[in-house]
Image (tube, rainbow, N blue to C red; front, side, top):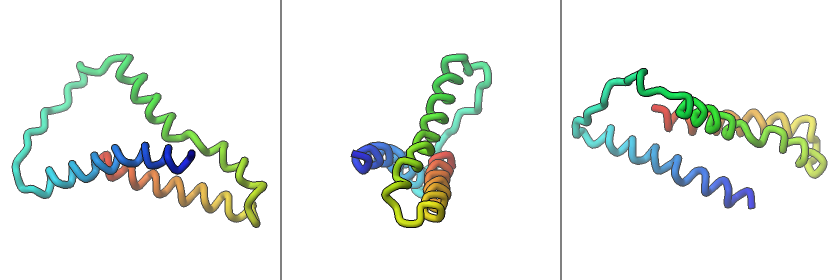
Length: 96
């Protein structure tokens, strides 16, 4: 089940990365409208906060797998840090 969830999460994210890369590398000039701070609303901020908090889900799940892992005191923290770095790089690529 977790693999399906990861794939369902990564497909649109990777699609955005590929589409943005294609647009940027195609050489065709694109117009980017300037940021309008007046367009921000409380519902937009709530939506952004929900997406941000959704990205943090799963840290508590690391302790569940700890009982099935050899040397959990080493493996679980290492996997948590590596996983966080990978996700951070993915989200950085999307933000670029």
